[in-house]
Image (tube, rainbow, N blue to C red; front, side, top):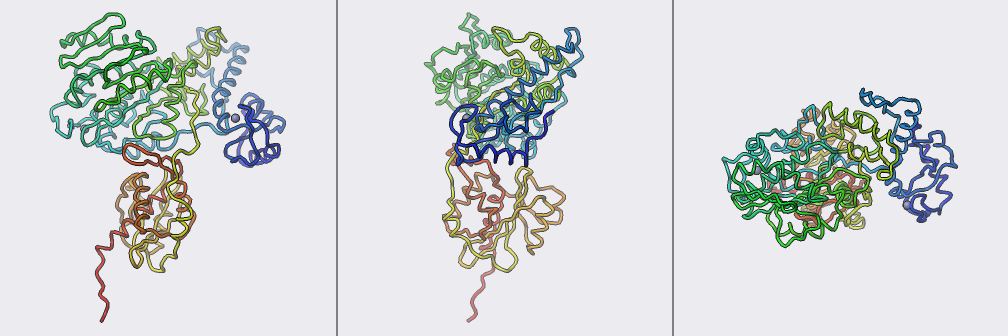
Length: 622
Ligand SMILES: [Zn+2]
Ligand SMILES: [Zn+2]
């Protein structure tokens, strides 16, 4: 077990290595300069800490590395350590073929190996989804015993009002209700007499989110989980539902196109539905490479090779085993074919693979880095830095979990360790981690995207003193367990509102601050905080809108010259760090930092502005 590489130790090491700069990055060779942003480089170890813990604190074993270059190799290091453990265990004779007792042999002291692995943003994490789920989604977030939630999932689309897969959905195209039709999940389960797995239901509900007009909201679904979790059934059910309902919900002559790394992969998924389709009177063609199914309503499901051209439009594209598809086959062929159609969708799905092209890696990385408003990410896999040989990790990475699966993963690992490097698979343990734990070698761009919204000079000009009296409005918002902000607002003579925002660690402290300010009105409180017992002594109403809405509103208020502040750093820092990128429904926030102070400030200012109409008119005495 290596010691902890953090805190003062790292600071001291950085100072020592910084004195040696400029020096080349040990990974990419490009120069790291002394005046580079210190966040862009780290102290790396020539002999990895995981395999050579005794050299961790030896300055001769230190070297500068770009943070980004180092992140790339985190999993590689973890695997190197794992292989070493495997080899040692083998020499001790720990492994034997007929021992099926599970994974205890493979436990290792593997600890997080990198100083800066990629991270899953709190917005994509399960706890956040559970805390913020709308009513139609909530029933699908109850994780049963035999399942695990995704490691990362895009938030509900901001325009979503419901999902065609959610129970009770009666929406139709352009708001015309289909009261008698079952949801997509209910239809699949009833008509095909199967029971979908929990993760398959979740994927259906998320993919079929629709807006108030009944349009599907996600244009691209990037989905990845380990092998043998039931991906084929998920694609099959989706294709059949789209053929059945797409004609009435979206437009006639629906075309579903299914491509795989080769035709066989895609036709295998379709073939398992052929007899079911024939029973319903649908036309089935089975010619090799020309497989197709045609619904009595005219909808078609075609199997194509990834090299096929598209002289026709596609409503639902299914790209299977994308690890073996080059990006151009998607972005230059099937993706443009879906662009023009109403509520069209493209599903990219694949388990990780050592030979993977950049297609899935880049799509997953991009979706982890920022929400573009059109891509839904559903990723099951391993937390960066997790112990790959811990059964709990296997379980957390498995969308569907059974005892058979545990035994299989253990057996596959032993197989890989016994095999050793092969000509066609130089790294069997790495392949095992790819296939069964869905470990992706990702480079998530941590550089902030987008344009700054506010500039420091203009913000500085708005600084004024706050009045002595009690505030007119108050608001509280939190940020993913990282802390809370309390905003107090005073309406000033002539219309503008001055706001003061302070930071607190917990809700009781925030409530106490509102009381201490002598505010007696109704406090606007972030929706995730409502119901907390700490609020019982406070009159509260829910704050509305997401960060993007708050930023838009703040820009609007500043445009009306309605905003003043007391100059404090908590709000200033958040406001000046905001970045946005263009999105389908206006600009979206792309910066990753806290924005609770911004939201609380906008709520308090908005309420204070609204007070104008409620205040009694005081006539000057004559
Ligand atoms: Zn580098
Ligand atoms: Zn609906």
